[in-house]
Image 1 (cartoon, one colour):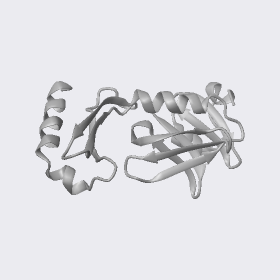
Image 2: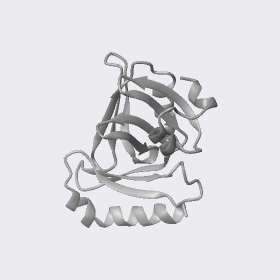
Image 3: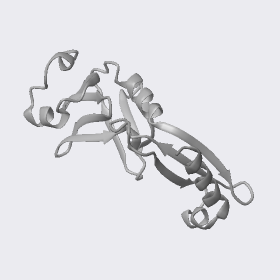
Image 4: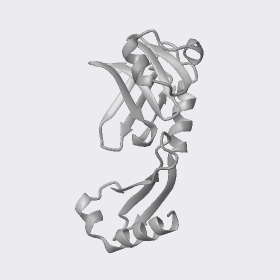
Length: 163
């Protein structure tokens, strides 16, 4: 699939979506090409082409046995694509998601409960501000995190530190 590095995709909808952005890795699925851009993953799916920015992927990875690249987005949605040709996509996936993480801090709540504060950078907008997110740890309710003053203080401290 090195062809995508030298020319534009044959599919006009895919070419329009990719535009002038750089393709760092490519592979394929039964439905069509899968592209790892500098700022996003582009893959075919129901209804056409889909794009997910690297900073919107909370976690995920490559399952070699099923040849599936899976991810969970920061909004809780999930995605996956079965690759018939992997290219360097599994490695790029890991590298790009990791590159989008600027900061991860765990805040202890009452007892053994925790919240996690993350700051992500949009790799397509290097001059953009960090995107902050506070997520409840395992077994913790969102309202606990929202009302805990330790979380608010640590978030404010981190925002000032990374400003």
